[in-house]
Length: 202
Image (tube, one colour):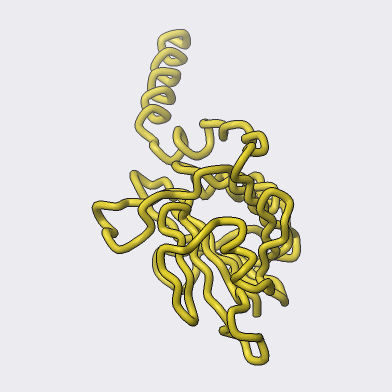
């Protein structure tokens, strides 16, 4: 009888685990390994500052530096420049005292939905994106971003460390005294996935 009871318990536990999407998808599933540096498009964000193939791209640089690195934008306006095929967008001179054409914040897409957003980015960023040691890529889960993220100064809403749900629907965020990271997210079967990152200085 005790042996039968153990079998029943084990079967019950296995059944519960197989039916628990959150446990399977977010706890038991290991994140993929860190991708190596990309030979052509390597974007690393560290402490609120972006570096493309080792070159500082802001915030705080002139948009001419972006045009030199990425070519002509698909949308070039006085307050905005967008590279839809590279999944990149910059806001220009939004902070008081900044010169015209200064990159005041920027955004990078790691996953796009062209059918749902026909006016949005046509493609995600084609290379590697790393945010304070957390790799961002198509299909990356929020739980894995928080596992890798290394920035103790960046606090989510309500305190703590790493990212937390924002008051803005569909976003996670964390902030320091100097900048805020915003992650645009979507949900599927209890798992939260990242679509894009925005970096906004304060």
